[in-house]
Length: 343
Ligand SMILES: Nc1nc2c(ncn2[C@@H]2O[C@H](COP(=O)(O)OP(=O)(O)OP(=O)(O)O)[C@@H](O)[C@H]2O)c(=O)[nH]1
Image 1 (cartoon, rainbow, N blue to C red):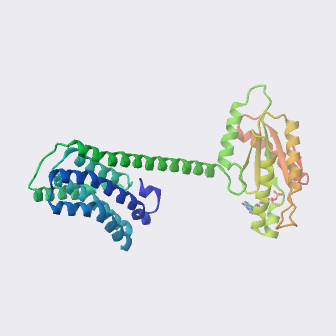
Image 2: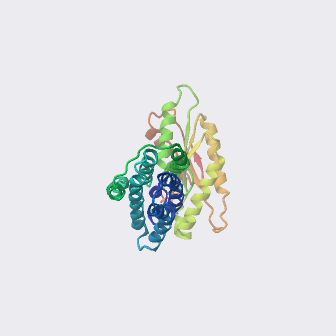
Image 3: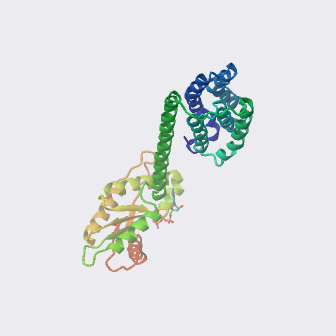
């Protein structure tokens, strides 16, 4: 799991709780097997009950009642490592469960996503290991009998699988969030059309790929007529509503290969690939009359119209030239009385 990356700091202890409860209980199985084979004294069994059953509940209570649950949970995680360290000598350095315990507690620290936590856990782990070695008088029996190997298997399989599942979920979540960020970056939030940068990149690409002799692409530059007056008379919210409605109308009328964008306050653009100018003019005329028919439920007095400049890319070597040609046509449309298409 990656508690820091998957949620807020305040819920770290809540997210770790099931993993600690399950992990300690599962880890208790090989420990109990070793103690049984060693004929361990009651004190070791009591310590096992504390580690495997009591500590997870105590850790939860300590974090929950703390004024700073996140810091309390970090302390709990360090205690987890110290407990694992103490259990290595208590199991007389039985090789497989000892190595498993130290590795898994360290992996748990790394997968919290908290920078350097695993390093911070090492001194406590080593100190607890030294103290427990003194208690056991340095008893050393590294051989791992078959029953202990078998008892290690569930914790090995379940822990590894759950860490892999956690990473899988995290990677998917990050992937989805990246896609969403990319979409937000490319889209104009008000109209749902392409944003300026995305649209310009697409237009420049189209211009570069324009096949010599092929049907030229056309550019429609659309400007809302007297939009300032809509804002001044009915408020900015009404202006936004007009922009949204025109954006939806433009988006709905285009073919799948066409690309519409909003490049400024009340200016929209449409790219029509492989479209002869007469056809582009017809598309623009259809857009113009569709906008003229827009009625807004909340602002029945608002009757938006648009002026549209049309330019084929044939004579333009740069996007700027192409855009200027459409802008000149738009200027003539405005000059000619607005609510019209000029090529
Ligand atoms: N509601 C709203 N208004 C905006 C937004 N962006 C720009 N505007 C307004 O759009 C208006 C554009 O006005 P002008 O460029 O002067 O042009 P116009 O009033 O449309 O006049 P003509 O283009 O000559 O027909 C300005 O009042 C801007 O404040 C926006 O996101 N929402």
